[in-house]
Image (cartoon, rainbow, N blue to C red; front, top):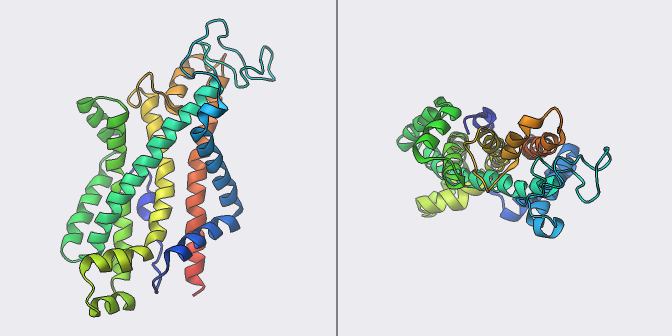
Length: 307
């Protein structure tokens, strides 16, 4: 999305020869496995996604249930802390560990879903822009430039003012505004691949436009798509948290890390743990997605340079 310039500037050259799907995914996995920061980041993302999926098994408290006899309990290890609430409770007596894990479901779902929709839309438009680089391409890229010129906050405020806050409108907003970075980057890679010998050979053999695009070109531009997806997922999680923090994102009884931070700001000096745990979870998650993308990008650039 336009909030992160790296989504527009990430550039990876395409392979000079077609590559298999298995080889591509194995290459991505090996790339992350050889990168120490990528290993840590991937491990954290797997951990947080696993915790979100297994929330009913890991947590024995209702994250929205109040308990006025146990309000503002500190984390375990501090004076007054208890093993029954290892991360403490908030001013309504709600267990913070339960809210942290269940809140990850909302934050991760919005970030991953919106990034996936934006990747699909942007990649298709980028394929068309790169393939028809003298006709349809300039028009689509000009639309992408217009998208980049619009401040995300202004667009978000306008959309939410018209249609109202809520999960559905937030998903639509974040999915739509993220396509431009994919389209502009993929168009460059497609334009390169479109002039390579294996694409020319496919045309000479009678392959149609759709076959050339999706069978021969698309598999060779997955690198930029994967890198952009990983980076944009983190950016969109952060964007959702920011909108929820100011009350324009998910609405009660739904909650996310951003709304947890908003609820904690009034008691930050005395009950700091209410803000520190969702803040750390948000920070580590966003950084992890960025590091995974960086690991894949670096490995792909090294592989292409060694040819």
